[in-house]
Each structure stands twice: as C-alpha cells, then as structure tokens.
Image 1 (cartoon, rainbow, N blue to C red):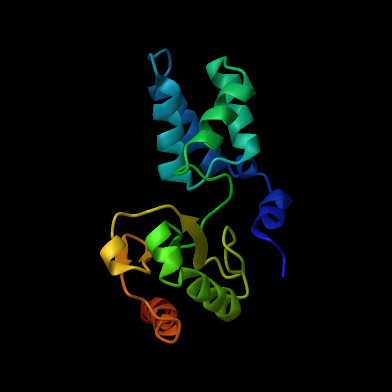
Image 2: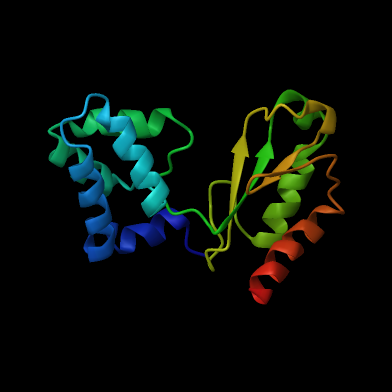
Length: 173
C-alpha cells in the first residue's frame, strides 16, 4: 500500500486551478496585515485541508517571507497538516491515563483493521489515524476521538464497531 506522503507527491496541489485560486484569494484578503501568517495558514488549512511543502513555498513567496518561517509555523502547531487527511479522523489519546488504560491495544486493532499506521490515511481517503496528547477525559480512559466526538472506556473488542459505523454512514450518504 502506498503511503499518504507518497500519494500526495504524485500531484502538486498548486497544479489544481481551484486550489490555487482559493489560496490566492486568502493571500489577497490578508495582504499587508500584521500577523497575517497565522491567519493565512489557518484559512488555507480550513479551505484546502492541508499545507503541503509546495503550498508553504507559494505562501512564503507571495508574502515575502522566508520558507523557513512558514514551515516553522506549520511544523510547530499540531493542528496544521502537510498531507491530506481522510474525511474522518480517528485520534487516539496517548496521555498517561489512556496509555495505562490500554490505548496501545486499540491502536493495534485499528492498524490491523485498516491496514495503516497512525499518521496515514486509508487508500479510499475515508479515515486518517492520529495520535494525540491528553484530551482531558482521563476518567474515561482509554479515549478515542472520532472527528469531534469523544468515545471513552473503549475496549479493543468494541473498537471495530466504531469503524463499521463510520463506513456504514458513508455508504448511506
């Protein structure tokens, strides 16, 4: 199976005229504003879905900033991603309570079912797996976030049902 990073390198998102137009509009709207880097990056992340290395270079060039500055912001904040995410994101809390509560078994189950590692997206673009730090639901450990929904006290044998629910919802939509 081809990794997400390898698939994204096959086509440059800036080759898509619609994507480039979205980015150009964001850049134009924020031209000359103090602190515009964060605003531009947030809007690009929201509207395009990710900030690839080529997009980072394009933003840097158009804002008159060094690429290193743009990359530094993108790599510092965990909510930015440089590759496309799936339609649904499953995040595994690896904070202390969840780790002790057995989150690694649930991660292993997800890897087994979906055939991908954390940080990767399924071939069909439906699900991305991610690790995250404490989500503040320690009393519910181990915790899994599916999109914005917190699922607590997850057991490895019940986890496949959560994936099936995502897949079933997509077939029905």
